[in-house]
Length: 175
Image 1 (cartoon, rainbow, N blue to C red):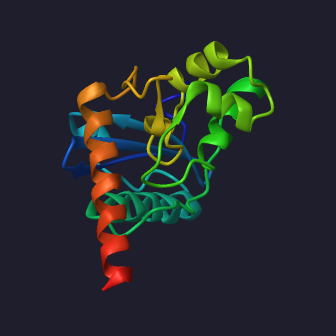
Image 2 (image 1 turned 45 degrees about the vertical axis):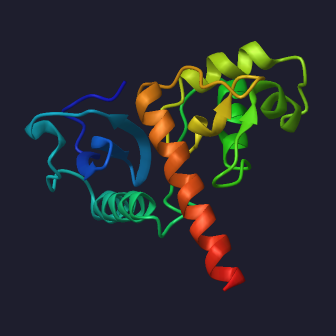
């Protein structure tokens, strides 16, 4: 966990349709995204280095664009802190297309570990940067919504949002 007095840590937040989301930037990279944040602690303050401030601006902008339906991929720099398996699992999430879902088994297969479904599920449950690393796109084998750090209501909203944006994109292309 990050120390509050670390001069290179910035905390910021963004109000979204699913509530206020917090972002933590450390040493010029996003290290955490949290749901349902409250309090002044999540107000952007110039406590970090210039690079961290720029990354915070970029992260909040890109998340805002995602929730507005105009961004499908994130390019903000991130830093994942976990075991090698967890980091591999989280990075694989970026390969799941916007507006689509995969099962835990499908994600494990994408990683070349088709029998590691439970380990993949456990790693996804510890994803420190949800939305940017879209663990909400992973569902149960029969399509049921399963655990999510933001709660199932937010997971359902994110999936419906992506489905609607994808449908608008397909309709616009056909017109």
